Length: 281
Image (cartoon, rainbow, N blue to C red; front, top):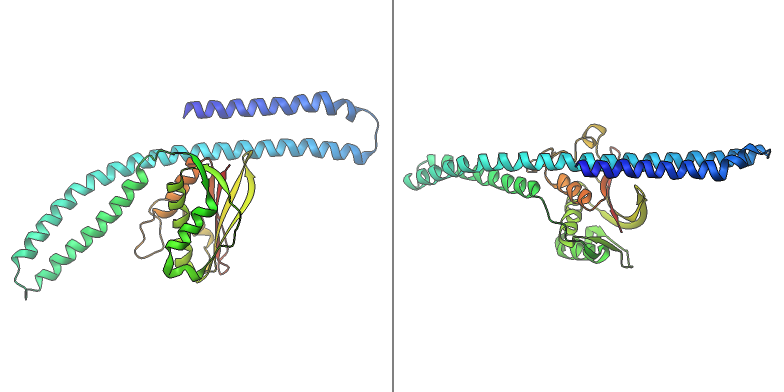
């Protein structure tokens, strides 16, 4: 990560130097001349706006680097936990199967043994999700038509297709890994379907941290998310669903950051939620 920070520092210094040169060579002599107050204010506002934009871009880059470090550390810990738990879980499941075979059909203890096996199965599923999350994905960046990918996601959600609205007609090409991006967007759509009765997906151009790209918006008409929950929803293992693993949204964040983008949420209690993935071109 030291190289990433060096790049960030070099970018900040270079950008600041360019603005200082611009201000000194082009604007300062003009500002020293007598002119109308409105013109002076307009030029000063332009310079201040440039500095503010630079500050926002540096802040966004810093946050992205911190997020990458955090996800990498969490991935290593998650893999270790999953490995340590799976071996004893396998032993417990083996003993439970022996007990299940040894009890007569009418013995009530069979229900207890089967309950142990069911719980082990649930734990195995959580461990698989954990290992999937902790795995360092290789990003195979190619031209991806996000519009077509979303069409395929909606098509495969046949039972809920009438609850999803997606009316974008033009191709929308970004550089990325199509499989990972489809998994991430599908996670958001499934979450939206769980939260509300209707889901609206939209695409729109935009920019972030000096990068042009596209926003994928997934909006639901559910109950919304409280302020406290909003600060936790991207934390691994945090979930409000009875059978949730708390891995879905962190995985979306991991994919977005790996593509040089981000994911955010706009939500108010009682007014639904909109999850936004930004993907640079």
